[in-house]
Length: 364
Image (cartoon, rainbow, N blue to C red; front, top):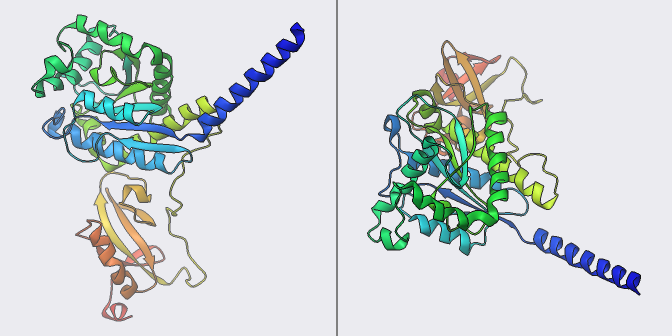
């Protein structure tokens, strides 16, 4: 009799567990991406950059990458330069019944500090962690009713943080797990200085009812790192690192196999076709020149592809397209100008070397 009951109980539990997994897999994995600051809150202004603009770009790019993944739903707390309260951000995540909340920021310091770090809600173990949380939490002073809205919370009082910690206790392990995936992605994929996963009292994480992580992508106050964070290349690389980490975290929960992000299929280098020989003339549209070496892929150049990069002296020049005639290249110029490359112009190449464009070439 006991054996029969045990078998029945095991069968029932197996059914429930299997059904639960199926239900979870049937529901999209919802990620809420929060671009910190915005509107009347510019964030930090290290080296005259705007934190609110940089983190919005990173958030949107991260979301676009994740939207291409099967079984993932992306919700943004903001998609434009507008102010949202810290509680308002949590409310958006809770309403979406998110599986993961990521708040994206840039750090600042009066030293030449650099590197990326990730945080989960908890008691700060040192003064630096308290300083970071204090800076991010001070935004509540922009709200007229902040004392009532945040139950008398004082960003400048370390004791106020103790009440925060209990709110996220149920999700702490998963939050640390998600944060670790993001941190390791920064270190291994981008070779960033490892500022590790830490705990600190961030108000924006207090009222979220799901695993939640705050990302400090780097220091705007560091001249080199600030320039990197403000660049399209830096923002694209950071967003890819975060998106990769999110997918690895998701895979660790649902047991799916993650082999890499779904990326653009566009080629990054020009290839010859049977219509052209190595000595034929081709035309490309120069869209940019820079001392920075940028990966010639479409997401770095507003979706344009293929992109070719050629170094001449200390400058890297970036070209769009591979056209068989000057008129064909000029017909595409409107698309390039619409992307914002106002100084673009056509150049001719023979054997991959730039040549002058003659009147005869323009007539063809």
